[in-house]
Image 1: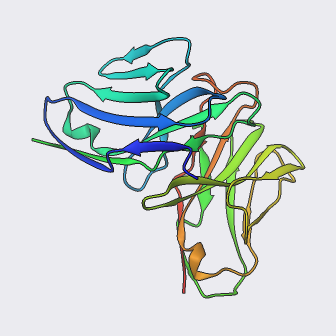
Image 2 (image 1 turned 120 degrees about the vertical axis):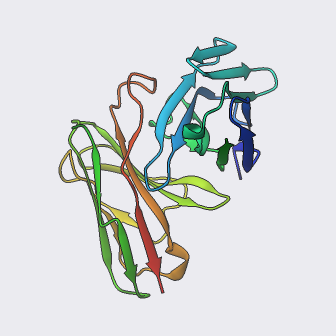
Length: 113
Length: 116
């Protein structure tokens, strides 16, 4: 059972464009939603995270939008750059869940010149 | 440098030959975990440990063992590897006190295992 569904599987964006990755979750007990960025040959690294008490969080060119009623959240990368080319994972965890993150299936982003 | 170190980075073995993947962290983290990454499936948790001598199963524990005798080390043991355990494995660690930006999960660089 995939508790966090992520789309699209892959994405090609032109330099300067907006990259959008979407995730949906089922478990209403989830209360922490991070995004991880993974470059080839490396482990995932925390990019940005949000809790459900806010609808949006922005850090530089990266923004998480959160819709609690729809149980959806998304990552927006503004002014996408070739250096943003990586695999992005959304994730979710719940209080009392023992620090466990449930990950989406990942999105391979390629930013072309 | 704060890091999670896994060894080896690449491992090719045959069915049934016991192997151990080591994981060590230098951040004094209480929590450690193993994930496997497979195409189309994302990262799935194998085992985790909240502290020394405390381990528990994740979502896909079958065929794996772990131990946590010291705070910094969390080895993953495959006693009788099978081809369906061919995967990319990641060790991760964090503080236990919070699941937020102040205590993110830190990942190692992965171990690519092939079982023939």
